[in-house]
Length: 211
Image (cartoon, rainbow, N blue to C red; front, side, top):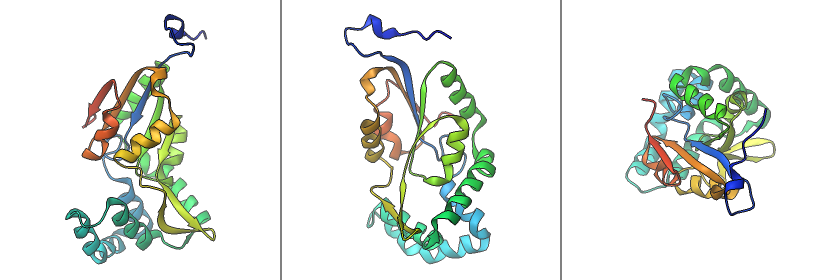
């Protein structure tokens, strides 16, 4: 198993890898928003609908641009998961990742990821979702950059630790972890305006590719 090292053709000393691919998750790899799906999975349809009815003033405020994406999301997380013991949440998240997430992914997205991996690309999921997709990423052998949930006294608070991994924050997190000039090709996949900053990093970009 000999690996080609294109780096020898470059002036720089470091090896330039074949490439890296960054995928948004919800709506790009999946057909549905996994935050909504894990809420439905955990609480059932009735509590899901009732909860969003009670949360509707916050969601309207977000749609009108009065509050941030992050604050709206924290209201949702706190309502449905606030004060849940971390161990219970992890169990829920892992079960959801292994049983429900596979039913939500586009087959074409799986084919694309496998094709990239066969071509020796690093594949990274960059998502505003959190722990509930970690085990799926592990099973697919892809790296994960995700929103981190705040934990206090071994419980989920419903707040986000740091910033929601969305928009410009996706770019900041990618740059903090990867030196993009070490890759010959950077491919980015996304499906909403929140992915535009990340898509701009790509030497090749795909918008809503698997629909």
